[in-house]
Each structure stands twice: as structure tokens, then as C-alpha cells.
Length: 253
Image (cartoon, rainbow, N blue to C red; front, top):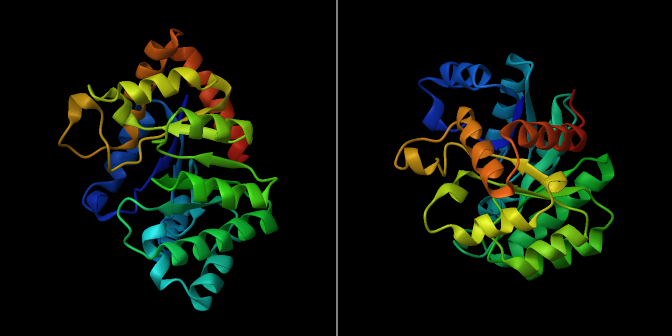
């Protein structure tokens, strides 16, 4: 069994064939899907999806791109959404200084608020960090102890080591299959298998063999194969260990 720990089936890219996409994932051995909230609307739609499918779970969060619109009303809405029984984490949340769609100070304010919410409710965090490693670590260190995964990992060796030292999990996407992604493959190799998750981040970052097409949870099977090649272990072992990692982290059975 495989678990796609991070995808966005609520996104419009899946509007025409969402049920078929979910069925294909099930056929490929994907036992659980964690659908990630990245906006108020997306968080609500993630919950609705989780109610429709017993093997889909939801998270509630606001992407850093949403930070300029974050206010007390949005905060209250998030606090209400997160109390649904199928919500298993807070996120995604974090900092993105690459695109800077929202002001850095507003990103920090939002991030700190969601970290506090996760601590208050004893829920794990799903972290987005892009070209913002120092500020991400500063905020997280001040909130310790917390349980977190750094998704779609894109930092370097130093950031990886610091995240692992804090006890965080790391997830990589299908972009590790790209010819120019040798640095990411090296990071996969460096990360202990018992601290790794599989994720597609669908509809983004499809595997190399499907570049230019939409990514979807079924393709987590291809990612598991690449993990196995890098780690020099069987696909079955990758599936077993990463699935147990995710089930324990998200408290799903």
C-alpha cells in the first residue's frame, strides 16, 4: 500500500474527472490520500472530499501566497474547519520568498498563527518553505516541540540536516525523476527512510515520463520506484516503511 501524503484534488485541474482520478489511484494501490488545504475554499473542499471517500483525509491551511488576505475572520473560519474529524493536520503553511505573492511580514504572521493553532490542537504541520529556510527554522524552533513535515523539499544539505535534527519528516515529489534533479536525489539518499514520505503535489510536478501532463495520485507508484532505486531497496520496502511513517504521523488507520 502507498500513501500520497500531499495532493490538491480540489483544484480546478481535476474538475472534469476527479472521481476517475481517485479510482485510478485506488487501482494503483494508493491506500490513503491526504488532500491539502491551501486556501479557505480549498480547505473546505478538502473536507468535503474526505467525507465522500473514506480513504481520503483532509488538512486545513493557508498557503503563504494567501497571507496578504489573512485577517481575524479567516482565522476564525480556519479554527472552525479544523475541528472536523477527517482533518489530520494543519497546512500547508510556511514561507515563500521565491514568488513573494504576499509580503514577507504577512507571511510570517500567518505562519506563526497556524503553528500556534497546530500546537493548541496537537496536530502536525505541513510546511511549505521556498527560499526562506532561515526564517522558517526560526519560527519553528521558537514553537518546539512540534511535529512537522517539510513538503516538496527543495533546500540544501544544511537545511535538511537542521530539519532532521528537529525531528521533522521530509517529503519529496516526482520532480526527483527529472534529469537535472541530481541534487534532490542526493538529498533523498541522505534522508533516513524512516523519516520520508511520498507525495505527488498533484496536479503539479508530474514524473519525467509524463512531463507536460497533469500529475495525479496514481503516479506515486512511479515515485516509490525512484525511491527504491536511490535507496537500493525494494519497492515493497519503500511502500511498507513510508506508509507506516505517514500512518503514524497523521494518525490514520
